[in-house]
Length: 190
Image 1 (cartoon, rainbow, N blue to C red):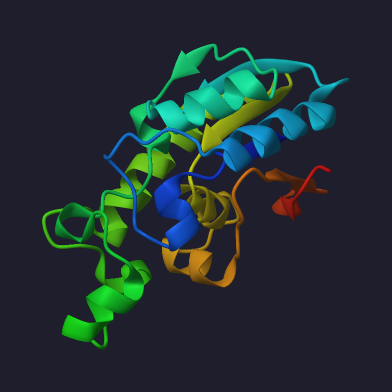
Image 2 (tube, helix red, strand yellow; image 1 turned 135 degrees about the horizontal axis):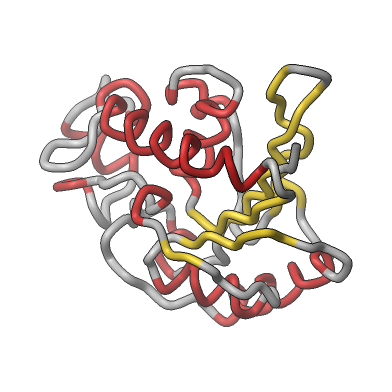
């Protein structure tokens, strides 16, 4: 059984300042591009049966700079839809809603935790036949990747709150004997 190699996109202006970014299609910063290029060292000997990217250009550009050839674009690995919280920081949101938590509350005019669960479960079901053939790379985003890892190990998406994930990192979802596991998390390439 193959592994899912999860790549978080490189830094954007908004990710550098903690602004929630889902539908807004931002370019990588120069630092984001440099770190995305550095990811290519992790893939020198990698052979993927598929490379799936979010439709956002920051994910697709990261794949390109990392030397990955995207074989399909899938909206189910796009970032959590923040709705009316798009472009805002958690601190700004909590100034209005002190008890707000993305992982349990979701976003007004955006996605709920159940919406994210449904689409990531759908994605994992589509990925299963590919994993029989080998490793699959998935180029995605911060919250979506954390939620994906949570669903991979059978946890609710809210488990993702406990998984820190930096930009331009590689994580590996695999198996420990018969159990799905997180083999590597938040690994940087220098």
